[in-house]
Amino acid sequence: MYRLKKISALIPAAGSGTRMGIGLKKQYLILNGKEILNWTLENLLGQDCIDEAVIIVPIEDVAEVQGKVKRWLDEAGILTPFKVIAGGETRQASVYKGLQALEGQTNYVLVHDGVRPFVPRQQISSFLDCLMDDETIDGVIAGIQVTDTLKRVDSEQLILETLDRARVWAVQTPQIFSHDLLRTAHEQAISNNLSATDDAALLEILGKRTKIIKSDAENIKITKPFDLIVAEAIIKTHNDKQEKL
Image (cartoon, rainbow, N blue to C red; front, top):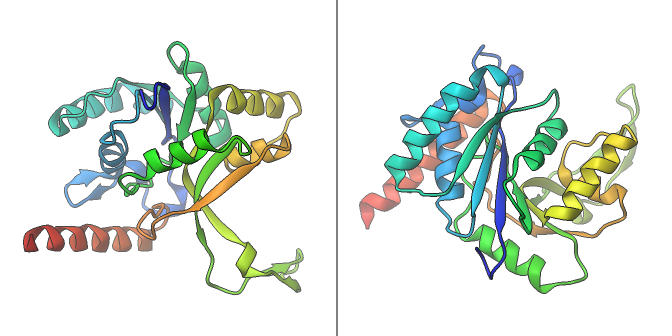
């Protein structure tokens, strides 16, 4: 419980990893001796504000991942209850299946990508504080303000306009919403045959207000081979700092 509220985490990790181009699902790739999903779960569930977790993986991996996650969390001394379930055909469908798998009554739901292994410590509690203390917002999500100049183009990649980068953010996870609101957003999307690439977009469709909070540059999502190089560098930097302490 966090401030007497139950917090549930959904970790979608049901992707096929086709963009990685190596024939292995990216959530199971090894970083410094651990699978990417292992890093994600240790960093996320190691924060004591989360009461339960649902990990969503490809259907053929459920039994194997269930065993691996138990071992990983036991070795890390993490006691958070969890279950592993099969995902859907899309990320959106997987998150909805995760919502359906939650046990009992929950107050807030956190959604975090299974291939985003370096969620900053203390970020979750600060996001929850923001959401609980501000009645004018309906969700809180992580993001990074873009630094490149952004162009909007047409179907032939001809430039239509230059966007004001001061008002453009690259969206990340974690994303946190009230359970009832997130479930309603997903059910409305199903009823109206709507799709979105993140959960905040489903709340936008309902006209709800979501606040984006600056995240950490290390909160990368591993989708392509170059991301593995960056991830290894992040781990090395942290290990070097620990050795100097």
